[in-house]
Length: 293
View 1 (cartoon, one colour):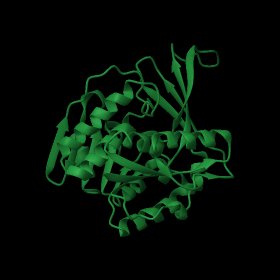
View 2 (cartoon, one colour):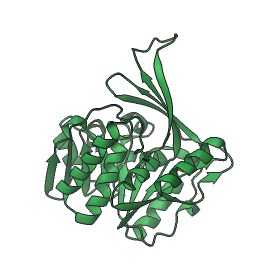
View 3 (tube, rainbow, N blue to C red):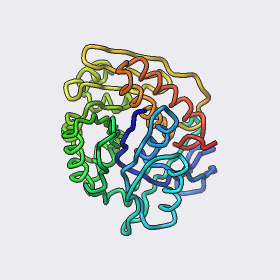
View 4 (cartoon, rainbow, N blue to C red):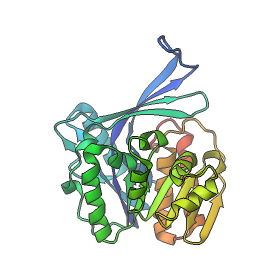
């Protein structure tokens, strides 16, 4: 059984499902719900729904939300240590979901900004690492996470990087993000992110450009499936048909399906299929985590 270390963030998602267009400066009908979230944490919980194990490196504040989020991880069987520290409050992400299921996110990293190199557990027994882009995009945790990356690479463990949204990436220069990509064994991103980082409006050319920085490039295409390139091999698979309720966490669940299967088989077709299958289960429910029942 593969074990994946997920590094980055644990937060509370506040989801507003809109029933109409936003009435700026006035009330807008919506349905509000709260869910455990955080990109790395989401990936870790979805990994527990595969034939793999997960451990999370993140931070929460010493507050009621932090206690609740740790309890939720325990229900999924995600391993963790040293998550709670006094200081900043637990991170929160406000998510607006429109009538088509598309989401817009407003993240506040909160306590996740206070990661320390000592939060990294002993690396024996880990087969791969998932790294959330939020951990590098936050200047307060960037140097620490880069130090973690150095230790992980020295241990010979492959790192798979999700740079997060195009909007979030624009906090720093494109060149700096690409410098991080060059440290990774693989990158997972959506079409918009691939076009931005790959520097070409043609997705295939953007993918080829990104291959100059990392050997494995995986691009999620939503309803059009997913594609990947590794060395000289290029594969594309169709999406799994499902009723889309909420796309929050779709990329996280895809990563959780793809990474363990890739580590197990090094077969792009099998890994992409595992990713799209798990993502289909995610978008059919509200929230970014798998159901507990």
